[in-house]
Image (tube, rainbow, N blue to C red; front, side):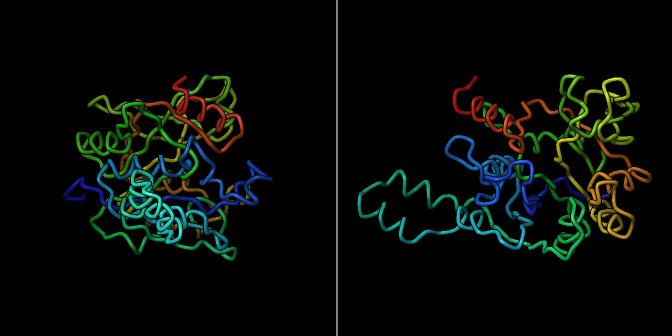
Length: 284
């Protein structure tokens, strides 16, 4: 078991084609779709940084560029702002590149498609005794006060004395078929412990209204499970899924499940993106 629950690295999954948001995602990377004046992924990054992360590993597709431009330097823009005394805007632009150390890992078209692949690609970048945040890049947990849901998860894991955990969110029971639904049990200390995820359950067959929101903390054994998934047959949709890595891991070690205290906002669908903008920009 890891000696410390300090976590300084995050893997953010942003390599998909964004097929649910075509045709706009043919020109704009899905994680860069705006929520207010910021891209969706920046809300994910901020949550990770507030949890203590200093190194962010973006797993990207081959034809990415907007993400790197956003977190990189823009010399012409900086000169323009400086020449016109737009000091507040200049400071805001410069701060983006200084938020963390950003790394880019390419998931090319010849590698197995699915969410287990980007985690396996980063396995060698994480020390044997390190914990790492593993999060999707097109949805986030919103707190009006700016607090971090991933920090809450790390604290809960320390209290439960486990080294792998995941967030969950509640949805109306009629909507469970859109998500992976969580089956859990309660341990002697009152913690929710993962049993399995049921994909596309009906309101009648779903074990709960708790859904998987792709927000995890992994120890190195969980990373190894992601690599093992790539050696197994893919899921029915042809993808190699990170949820299968959690299923493998949970057969030998406990996975803490923590209900999110904030509001789950999903920018991966058109209606979800509109709702996220309305919530964040107008506060409604």
